[in-house]
Length: 596
Image (cartoon, rainbow, N blue to C red):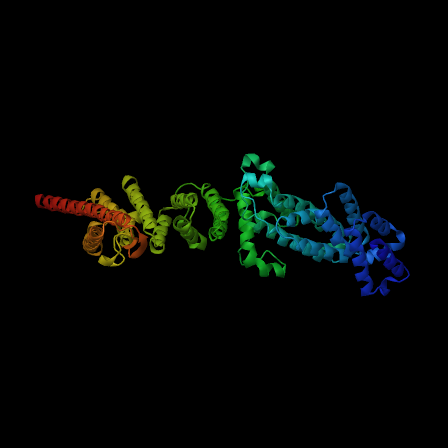
C-alpha cells in the first residue's frame, strides 16, 4: 500500500517542472516514503530512488527521507536490512540538494541525547562531510555551522577520567573525537591551498577552523585526564589534542604565537567575532593549550630554544591562574602541574622580585592558598602546599620578603600564616649562617615582624582559632632571642622588644587567662549537667572558637573542651619560656655592661 502511494505521488510529479512542485507534494512524498521505510519496503524504495526518471524529484524532495532512514539504522539490528539502509543513505547523499540535506543532517545530529549522541554523530559524519564538499558556494559558513553543531553535542558527553573509562568509552566521546579529526582534515587542507581566486574564502574557512580548535581546547581537552606518557600512543584524547595543535599550525596559528601573544594589548586575531569571544572563551582554551605543550610535551619541539625559563614562566603563570580559578578536580590538578613544570625549570633564588609586579605572580600564590584551605581533596591540598613552597624557593630575597608580606595580609588563615612564619624563620636562619641578608635583618625584618608578633584583636583575639599562627610566632620569637644577642642586635629585635611585649606578649597573657577561665567554666558546667542527669544522652551544643557546634554528645563535648585547654597550656608554656629567655638575656647583658 505504501509503495503504491509513493509511486502514485511520483507519477504526478514526473510531469511537473521542479518549480511547480507544491508544498502538498512534499508532504505526501515524505509521508509515503516514511511508510515504505517503516514497513520494510526498502528494496522497492531503492529502485524508485535509482530510477533516472525520478532524478529531479529525489533531488528536490529526497532529503526528507534521511531522518527515517537514519532512525532505522539506529534501531534495526538485522545486518541484511542495515546494508540496504546504508545504500539508501548513500544514494540520498549523492542525489539530493546538498543545501537542504546539510540542514536535515544537522537537525538529526541535534536531536539525540545521552549515549545516542555519539551513535548519531559517528553515523552521520561521513555523509555530512560529503554534503559540505558538494556545496557550490558559502562553504566556510557551512563548515563553521557543522563544526559548531557537532561541538555543542559533544560538549554534552561526560569526559572519561580514568584509563578504564577511556578504554570502555561508554558514551563514545573518544571515538567521536577521532572521527571528528578525519571530518575536519579535508577542510584544513582546503583552507591552506594557495589558490588566488579562493584567497578570501580560504581566510574565512581558517577563521571557522580556528574557532573550532579553540572550542575543542576548552571542551573536552580542558578537563581531560590523559594517560601516562608511556601509554601516550594508546590515548585517543591525547591524539585528538595533538591533531588540534597540528591544525592550528597548519592554518597559520602555531602555538608559540598564541601562547606568547594572548592577553597583550595588540590583538593577534583579525576576526571581529573572535575578539568578542576572547574574554569569555579564549582564556580557558589557551590555558589548556599551554598545559598540553608544557606539561604533556605535545609539539614542544616547535618552541624556540632561546626562550629563558623565567620568560616562559611569565606567560604560564597567567594560564595557571585560569586553571586555579576553577573548581573541578582535573582542572585544578592541571593548574598545579603547569605551575610545577614552569618552576622546576628555574634555579632556586633566581626569580627576580620585579616579576611580582606582574599581577599573576601575586594572584597565583593567593589561589594556591585557597586550594590549600578550601579544596575538599586532600591530595590537591598537599600539592598546593608543595607548589607554594616551591614558588617561595625560586624567588630572590626581596621577592620572598614581598610575598610574605602579601600573604600575611591576605590569607586570613591561621595555618597558612604559620607556614609563612616558618618560612620567615628559615630565611633569618640562612642570613645568620651565611651572608647577612638585608631583607631578613634590621629595619626590613622589624617591619615584617610587625605583621607577625601581634594579636589582630588584642586580648580579645580568638586564641583557639589563631593557635597555629600564635605558636609559630612564639617559636620565631624564641629563636630570635636565642640566636641574636642584645649587644649584636643583628635583627633589630632588642630595639623593638618593648613594642613586642606591649603588642603581643602582654595581650597574649591576658587572652590566655580569659580563654582558660571560659573553657574551665564550660567544663564545670558540662560536668554538673552530667552529674545531675547521668543517664542523659541528649545532644548538646558547645561554643568553640566563637562558633557554636550543635548536636554534640556530652562525652564529645568534654573532649573538645579539654583539647582547647590543652592548646592554651601549650601556648602558655612556650610563652613562659620566651619570657624566661628575655629575662636571662637582658640580665646577662646588664651584668656584662657593669663589668666593662
